[in-house]
Image (cartoon, rainbow, N blue to C red):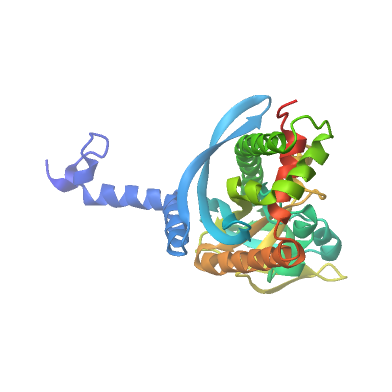
Length: 358
């Protein structure tokens, strides 16, 4: 049988050029190349990037789902007395979406100031010394975001001339943001286990130091910790060890074959397109928001970075620069004023959370 006569179903399609091209095209439409290219781009920016899985609770049952990428990078460290350091990692959690026909229209938020004032960004996975007051309302203060939206409308470009049917939805972005929200909760809960173990170790150090000072003293737990810092702060810092804090940012990365457009509505209901967008923040609010209160901080919004693959580097730089500014404020207002602030805050937290010795 000649190459052109090969049956695509007989297991020999690889030998047929036409059949091979059909499968290659189908694979390209799947979105897998976009995921691989996004991870490749992140690695070029200094991140450790890989595909992973998370567990989602659906209708009282656990379902494992794929996360297109999880990327990590060290972003800043703070000096602690006795030559120790406490660091922060930036973690990017990403969903990649490819659409054959849909353009994406982002409508500008009209209550932007109020919504941003209560939004928590980045998500604090493992960063007990970073006060909530630093991350709440941080978006307009520290990040040079070009656009904010709470509504992304997807329109099928092939059906623009068919006015008889609804031609818009938010299926792609809604599903992606919901997945990112569940993934963020899963990884935050996992890191809480690491956090708890580190706290237990700190509590043991506090108990050992306290007993070395005065094992018969019956002060309250908080006073015992304060006593350690009054008398044995240098020794505590010599023993100090704690995992890096983790600040997480969810990303929705779209393919480059469609448009990402900013849109507004005037008083007469007319829609205007202002231009194409390189990157934006979508303040997503889930219908299941009550299940994520411990993750979202003071407000109900889940900020998601939205960009195309071509502008992923620019979006990541916006996040990195803003997070560096945020941590710089933390350093100026807390760490520089009191070099013992981080170990003391962690020690007091360990005293509160860990049972320790009685």
